[in-house]
Length: 129
Image (cartoon, rainbow, N blue to C red):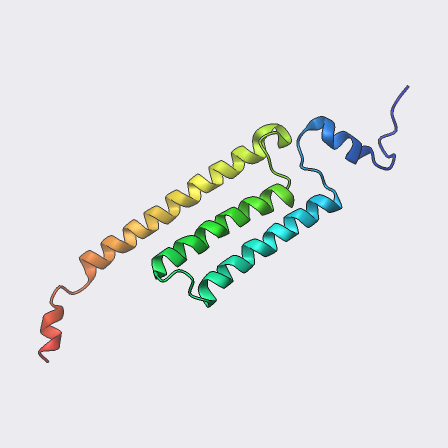
C-alpha cells in the first residue's frame, strides 16, 4: 500500500520525525518576531538615551546584539540547526562566515597598509604654508 504524500499536514507531521527544522508554527514565528523586535529596540535605546557613555562600548554592544539577532532569524525564520539537511546548511553557513571574515580582515589589512605607506609623510610641511 502506498502512502499519499499530498495529504494535508503531511509535511508538518513528518518535520518532527526528520528533526531538521524548528517548528513552523504560529507560536514559533511569533516567538521569533518578538525576539527580533526586542533585539531591535535595545540598540535604539542604548544609542538614543546614551546609556553607555563610551562610544566604543556602545558600538560593541550594538554589534553583539546584531549578531544575536542574526542567529534568531536563522533559527526561527530560516529553520537552520545542526540537524537540518544533514548539517549541510550549517556547514555552508560556517564556510560563508569564514570567507567573509577573511575578505573583511584582508581588506582592512590592505587599506591600513595603503594608508600608512601611501599617505604623505610630511604633514607638518603643509602646516607651514
